[in-house]
Length: 453
Image (cartoon, rainbow, N blue to C red; front, side):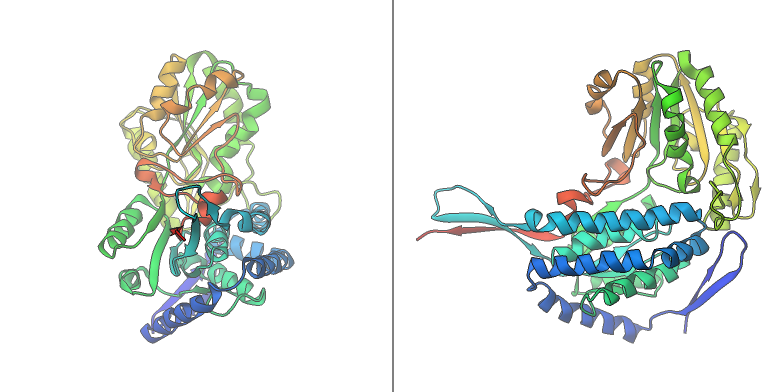
């Protein structure tokens, strides 16, 4: 039988070996999901909310274990792992308080005696999730999806298989019916068969552009709804009146948190020339102060990437950009899975660090003459997750929201996901929205009922 091995990316130590689900085991899980859905969808929303509250308690009770598991499997600094678990608890609390309102029937006045919109769950939803936020990415899909009455199958990234199985156990220990949330220990080769199975009614993917195109193709082939949250190449605009003393920590965090492994990280720093020198001095100083070390140590602020091949890919993107004329201010050194925080200047539009997603601690700096030039450069991307602008004139910046096609526009703040606000992208960053009311309605049948006497 095939197996999956997990390793600690910081020291290379082997963590666990997991046996992949056989074809018969996958069939059993699909059948269980199908049978569980028939009863789960009939459960009153109050009962589902009670289970959510149980889940929040389970997550809180196991916070240290879950954080440690995350750090060991993908190298996230331990304080960031703990913060990720806290965010999952906040998400659960948000839907515990708002799900009933989000899902209640909407009465519509028409010529009918009665007409209304209701929201029926679709069934079993397949989630294909990445390793960079191994709990948050799954929870932001699963909590609204299950609360709406669906059941879920998770195909997680293989290097965080321990996290994937831990999530399933959390749902079971919280009292969710067996089959409501199941982890599939399998590889990408089985996804096409899963997508073609009648039990699977929809799919949600967070991942790369390449993976998104494949899943969209399979979803189209099988006429099944899909939600795609793909890569990003977010711009961070620094205007001449930006308060750098106030926001430089936020600006650095926007690139370097999670060791730079975030789709919504600031990757292109577009700086107006009148503030350029001040920005470079303060930004470089803060980046140099980041402490590399064992991710299990609480004073570590940046660590290795999740796999060595990811660091190799990042190194190649930077080297190709250097070959095209980019200048290294700091970094561009690799040791195994560790890639040193890197700052590049004299970046132009044809370079990989400008036009591609760089998944690691690399900041591409682009100097522009005017504010108009800054917005034009920010919009010059095939990606569309989010843009951030730092300025003292937030009112003027808010008038330029429509100039950027991205799914998010953040003024004096880094792009981030928040359960209270819808999250998603445009262009090759995907489609559909997670979180907020939009997230719980992502996988429902919006049904019209029209009644005459």
